[in-house]
Every structure is written in C-alpha cells, then in structure tokens.
Amino acid sequence: MPSQPLRVAVVCSSNQNRSMEAHNILSKRGFDVRSFGTGSYVKLPGPSPDKPNVYDFKTTYEQMYNDLVRKDKELYTQNGILHMLDRNKRIKVKPERFQLCKDKFDLVITCEERVYDQVLEDLNSREQETLQPVHVINVDIQDNHEEATLGAFLICELCQCIQHTDDMENEIDELLQEFEDKSNRPFLHTVCFY
Image: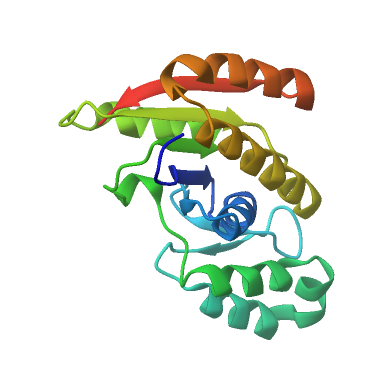
C-alpha cells in the first residue's frame, strides 16, 4: 500500500454538486483531493429549465449564494441549491476549471461521459514531461442531490480499494470490473501520462 494518500481529482461539469459532494467525502476520509468542472461556465438550476443561473468560474460560492437569495430565497432553499452552495463554500472559495490546473494526480474521476471526454482531450493535448501515469475513470452519476451523495460514497469506496492495492497499474482493471458488477454501473478507464 502506498505510504501517501492517492492524489485524486473529481470532475463534473460545473464543480457544484457531484464533484463537490465527492470532494467533501474523500477529504473527510483523508484523501489528497481537489475538485473541478470542465464547462465554459458554471450553471445552476434557475426558475425554469430554459433559464439557468450562469456564472463565471471566478465567481465565489458565497457570491452565488447571495445572488440566489436575492433572486428567490424560497425557490433556492426548496430545491436544495442554497444548502449545496453552503456546503461548497465550507470546502473551498470558488469552483475551479480542470483545464486551468497544472497539478498532477494519480487518479482523475469524472462523473459523466461528456466530462470524461473533455478531461481526456485536455490531458492528451498537454505536452508530456514526466510520463507519470494518471488513471482517468468515469462513473456516470445523475446530477441531482441524492445521486451525488450515492455517487460520492461509491467514488470513495473505489478510491479506498485502489489505495489499498499492492500494484495499482496491474490490479485496477480487475478492481473496476468488480465495481461495475457490484454497482451495476459501467465504468470507463483510460491511462494518460503527464
């Protein structure tokens, strides 16, 4: 087992719900974790599906929270968005874009296939320097509060199992197959190099 915790990145589209819930759980379990989004903008549900609240990645969770309280406190309390933003601001100041981060990770876990493709595109466009491997794994998680919580525990369990392998490079495929069977969800996996 490695002496240091795995360096893990969890990535969804807006760095709001799924990646932040997993970030929260993983950090409580002692992992070296960061979370990101891959979208051009941060989008939160609005008063109707065709009217989302759109923010720049530079906008803090606190600013989003205050903006939504001003717009319709009752609506955003009822749909859980204010609660989610409250959790987020306790973890970090603002959402971060994966494409702007140059840190290296052992494991990058994405929460939907489109985000997985964006992460792979970004990693493959970077110049390889150290040839350090990074395992990119996708676990499809619906973007709602309940699924984000269930997905976060699944991601945490997966990270704990990978952390305890003797040889991650040779054991990861078998491990992912076990998780697919157990969770009844398909997992995608690619190895990229820094």
